[in-house]
Image 1 (cartoon, rainbow, N blue to C red):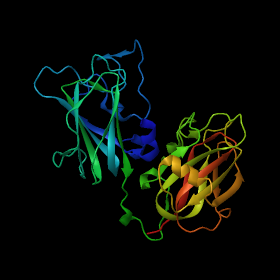
Image 2: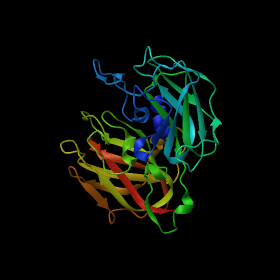
Image 3: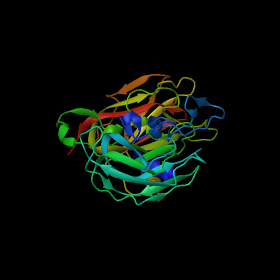
Image 4: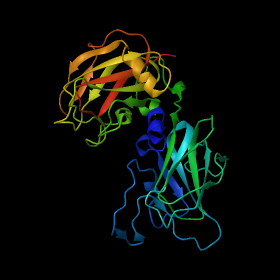
Length: 327
């Protein structure tokens, strides 16, 4: 289930989008910022700090007064939410037995009003992970997680799709049409052994070799591939393939196919992508390099989907599709 969510949506609460936990009633045992850490939660035996056992998540102290604890996450980009993932990994005797989630849209850092409840009171278990789908058609900017009465939650993922304000993009303005901030997202890949395809759309250059899409070493004929969706229809003028940090494991070559239309599940779209026309013919790549291609691109109308082929395998840090929005 969780793998399918990652193929269809992005985590709107990820810090590299600019998301932040801006308030918590109490984070005595574990810093509220860890709640949206993109890394899987870990448990480190024997690690303590001045307040007690170090835990990878958000954890409040044992409540000795009436009430309950809650925190507010400000999303880095407004988005339409499909559902929430609540992870209590490693919290066994200290997890909250109940939770509830509210959302709102606001320009304030930590809103006081306008909250809408989108889940019932949820029953939580220790060292567990649940997905809660919601029906919320309007874009939101903030999420408020209530826990009853206190305790620790390892991670909160806000699965959905970025809802960009296209009115801020001029007719001739050039943007990265594949950037997650403009609604771009990784879809599916034949192999994500070392790194997820969604990393290709992230802002900035990769911070290390783990911050990219990397496949295992291929020991059979063929090559590896990934399919991604642009945030909107666009006309591509430039393609950037960045192999930052990939030195002994970068792909020898790559090519890109593209299409204006695709339909169905990610797996069904992947089958359709096999016959898409070529946007970038096969080109040579180098280690730890930003490759920019302009003259190599085949003239093509507006597109919405791309398939990145790498030969035969390896890792790519970022993929940029630079161009203009087609309305």
